Structures are given as structure tokens and as C-alpha cells.
Image (cartoon, rainbow, N blue to C red; front, side, top):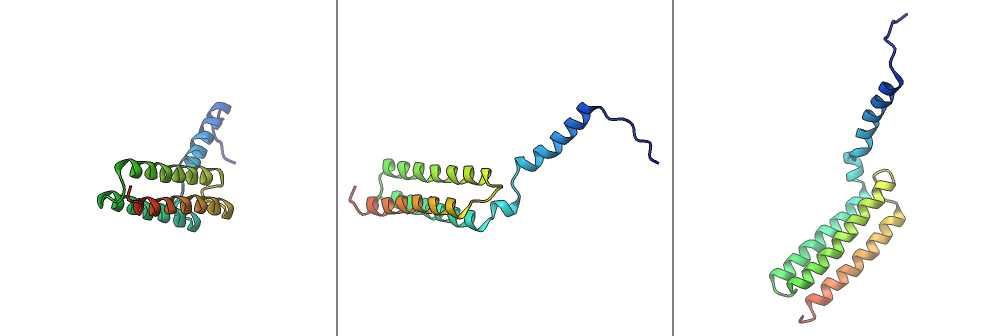
Length: 117
């Protein structure tokens, strides 16, 4: 029927690696916008704004703001790690764990803003 040139095994492997690597290297928009991830990340954005506002109004010292930002950054890093191991989304259990961590940071923001330093 068709007369295709013979491909060497290494060429076939290279082609497979090229096509599969691209699929795993980048998340789809759906994975980035997954509802559980969106909820977690919106809370992190909100907390970031609260920290910035607290520093701007002098309710938070630069050191307090830096520490709070560091904690939020660690939560975001953990969210990305969880999503990477679960096909681009986070599980309900992951979301609950992240929400618990975000609740702790939110309470810290509130307490530190109202502690009088």
C-alpha cells in the first residue's frame, strides 16, 4: 500500500519524547482555572492585598509583612506542587488543607494589624 521509509528506533523515541514533553510541561487553561485552584488562589490574592494595605497604613511593620508574604508564598508553592501531582488540579482534601493554612495566615494578618505592633 504505502511505502514509508523505515524509521530508526532512536528517531521514534525522540519524536515521542518531543510530543509528550510538551503535553506535560504546560498546564492547560482549564487546569490553571480549575474551580478549587481558583478559590485557593483568589484567597491568596486577597490576603496579599490585605498585607500590602496593612503595611501601607503602618498597621504592619515591613518585617511582619515580609513574614506574612513568605507564608502565603509557601502556600502557593504547595498548591502548585499538589496540582502537579494530580493532573493539574487539586483534590478536595488538598483544598481543605490549603484553606486551613490560609485561615491561619488570615488570622495572623488580623491579629498583627490590630496588635499595635
